[in-house]
Length: 172
Image 1: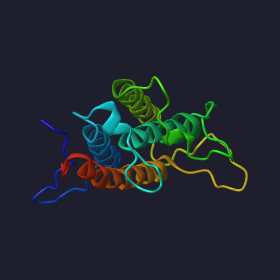
Image 2: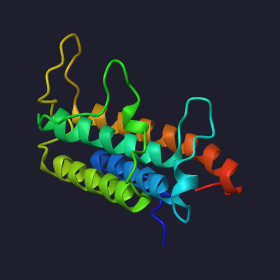
Image 3: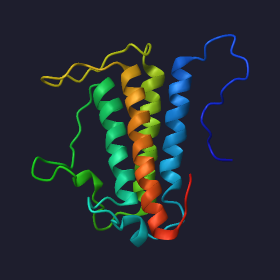
Image 4: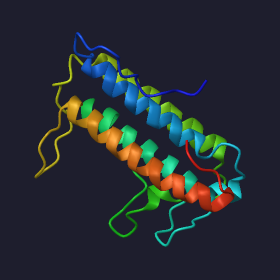
């Protein structure tokens, strides 16, 4: 059975737990992202069908870097190498020779699992990033979760359009 967003209760007598609600919506969209490449060939999943050069598998790869960046780097303060540069800012979207759907999806799922561990270990939603970025405020876990829902859902919409162009599949 596919993951569904958290249900809305019929009769709200107590507020829904905020952290679980945010995590539930993010996990729902994470599952949508993976479903968008299911059943495709590597050629179709890697084929850019919009002028920006975006492909379905490229979005999965990009979102893995976003997960790692906000949770492991942001909240935990870990440092990682990144594929993009000022000269090649979209390298995280590019599928390199030898990469496979299975490999990119597994890496994305691993980044999501590590992000869930970071969220579980955080003392509360007000926990601040450990990463210091010059000229930018440190963000709270709450802000990061909301941002990740927005980022993942926005890219799921992009993927809807690209997938429809490939084989006519619509919806999640």
